[in-house]
Image (cartoon, rainbow, N blue to C red; front, top):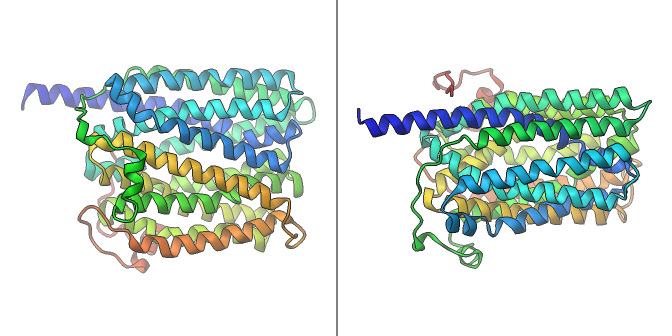
Length: 442
């Protein structure tokens, strides 16, 4: 075997190991942050409208900064520089969060501004990271590899989400602000370890050519003709429909239903548990039957999630509803990302991921802002205005999930499978349709 090929393979394997170590600490940080920004804002006296802003503006600014990610990467000729620089900046934003929590009493708007910076710095690195990782993993193994990777890291998110909830619950009767100071401080330490391992990753050379450059206007001009552009529009519309309601699940639990922090954490963790329990299974199925096939199967099921919350708000029922949520979102999230890797050449991948994230960031922003606006004006449903918002989200999700994927086409040769066989394989009643059970270990 060629010595250069052996050396390249060794570098890639080493890089994947460091990436996985980065993922461990990044997941710990996510467990301590992603589901606790909204509760902390409520603790600061934030309103439901400000919760909408908290979920809107970080996505808006994250979308804007990614318009320039590909240009900066091409100018610097390095994705790794971008990743390392902006992950470090993101980590540093956790320090003012910890200080705010330690001293308490700041205006909600100031906390929202810090979260905007935190999200924007992380977003700037996302496209470059996705491009770099897709170079390391062969096309026919991406579903299996990322499914395995996300499953392990997801359980780490779950564990630390629970630990954060436990800490907050313990300190709730003493000084809850100290609880948030602890989890935000530890999140900073975890992200710094994550950044350290990212600096040790190998970056394969990537040739940048002028013909691979295209502007957002060029991308928009191909919206009616391009399969990938149509896919981006579909995902954006789905995220818009989802984010009408999703920022306000925490408000319903903590403000309206008066759940404890422990109840909130357990119900939140339920979705995370099934999401990452099932993601490797979805990955192996996607490798064989295609990412788009999985997306078309789970998209309508995403619509029923807010409807389940309308049916019943008993904590046990909501726990079961969240298990269903994690099941369908695990397939959707994994396959949406992997479809991009399949559909786009390596030279265009950073730019296409950036534009994908731009559209989704703007959709998430608009959904949260509109949700916050409507929440103040909708009539109550079963005693809660939030449930009226959930009903609108349910209808829009169903319309988008059923009709928009019909126009999309798979980008690689895959086998066909019926909905019945796919469903039985997912829930484990039927074997994985001849797919060999194995994992990639790096």
